[in-house]
Length: 95
Image (cartoon, one colour):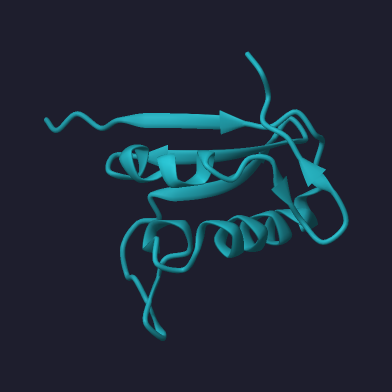
């Protein structure tokens, strides 16, 4: 059985479910489209595979869930924290 790595990144701000696409868009715009796992697109087509970076609201807090190879790729994200959406700043949770 293959072992899979898993990383859950949580933020301190509360978020509503309808704001998740805005957060995802802000992260993709900040990190850059060259990092495919953040947005699951290759050129103008979808990357047809299970999304290895997922954006979720858990207990009203935004989370980025990274699976397997995305655990390595997520380091690009940490260069740009905090993330700025259209109307606010979202900070990582210090724990």
